[in-house]
Amino acid sequence: MADKQQTRRELILDAAIRLFRRSGYEATGIDDIGAAAGITGPGVYRHFSSKQEILDECVTYGASEVLQHADEILSGDLAPRQALDALVSRLVDDVLSRPDMVTVLLRERRHLSPAAKGAWTRAVNDYQSEWRSVLGALRPDLDDDAVAAVIWMALGMALAAAQYDTGYPRDELAAVLHDMLVGSLLGPSDR
Image (cartoon, rainbow, N blue to C red; front, side, top):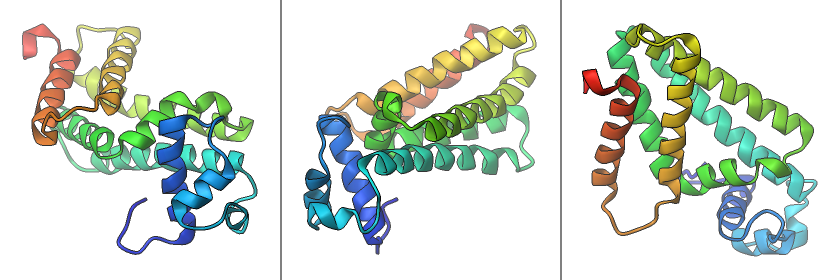
C-alpha cells in the first residue's frame, strides 16, 4: 500500500499492519493505530468503523494483491517452467518486501470476521490452484494430492522467510529463497 502520496486510509492500514505484527491484533488499540498514522485515535473512525474492519481490510487487500500478481503471470504466454520461475520470483519479492503484511496474514487470521475469513480462504484456494496448474505440468510423477502438498509446503517455507529478521542482505536472501523454492517444487531430479 505504500506509495509516494498515501491517503489517510492507507496510512492507517500501514500503521495497523506494523502494529499488528509487532504487538498482535488483540494488544493493539485504536489510539495506538491513530498515533502511528499521525492522527488521534478517534480520527481513525472517520475512515474505519472498527479495528475489526481495519484488520479485515489489511488481510483482504494483502491476499488479493498476491492473487493478482499470480493472475498477471499466468495470463502471459509462458511455458510452465518459465511460469514457475516467475511465480516463485514474485512470491519471494512479495514476502521479502512486505514482511509485516505476510506476518499479519499468517498470525491474525483467527481474528477475521466471517466474511473476511471466507474471502481469505477463497483467495488461498485460487492462489494454490494457479500454482497447481503450473506444477502439475512440470511434475507428471506426482498425483494431484502430492502436487498440492508440495505447493503447500513450499509456500509455507516462503512465508516463514517474512519472519526472518537479520542483517542478511535482501538480494542474497531472495536468491537463496528462490533456489530453495524451485528445488523443493521440482524435486531432486530437476535441480
